[in-house]
Image (tube, rainbow, N blue to C red; front, side, top):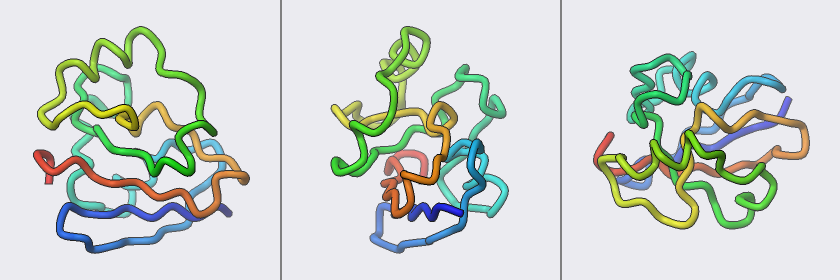
Length: 107
């Protein structure tokens, strides 16, 4: 199973095993990671799972789709080039070691 590390705004790191095919958001919610609110349950409708993907991994994901792009425009935290909605990031074996920074306004 691939591992994903969630980094809180205070620098605390939580590393979890993720099931292949699950989203970064699902893994966080299932394990009680603070700051990944996911009010809409992963349907790309609320932007409360906004994260910053480590630059070493950002190009391993598909490009932001139109719906996610619209949602990222309305996030509470600053949108950055590495901003993504964690509900749209599906885990794969080649993403082992993925590092995710939780947006500060959600924490």
